Length: 227
Image (cartoon, rainbow, N blue to C red; front, side, top):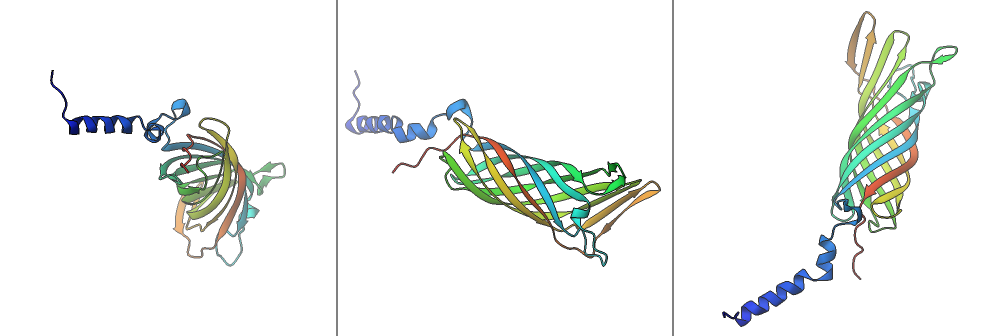
């Protein structure tokens, strides 16, 4: 029978100790429910209130003259970059609560679409409470119709956001958030029954969306750092 040399035997003993180490076992263990630790999927529901002007023309045209607010839904898959930072795209779909009226008993139709990329920092990803804050860059398209005229403004925006999530077991989290978005419409499109046109706005100004709401989230909590 062939016997192992002393160095080979020592190497096998060391390898077995490393494989059975609790720390390594914890790092490679599957999270509860099988949800990957590097991925998170979130959905938000909230309300956004408008402010500021839509353009910088001599005759002020304010965003709140068009919209009372937005009932918004945001979808956001994110990827963990290290233990505290998450990056990913986001998409907002909204039901517009309109202020302008096309008749005495009917508000004019309108819509709002936003999308972009975001980065968020989580202070306590091991839970059970995880406060977070971040910034999002995006593009907004807002449209409304007055009679036979369809008007669309679009342009870039930046959002500052913060909130906290609570872990309710396994990969399920829920919490609240607030955000403030500042943007400038850069393009105006007008569609008439006789034709359509588009122009780049020369007089641009700041408008705001201030929002709040709740968030539900699937993300496997990270293991707490050993003391």
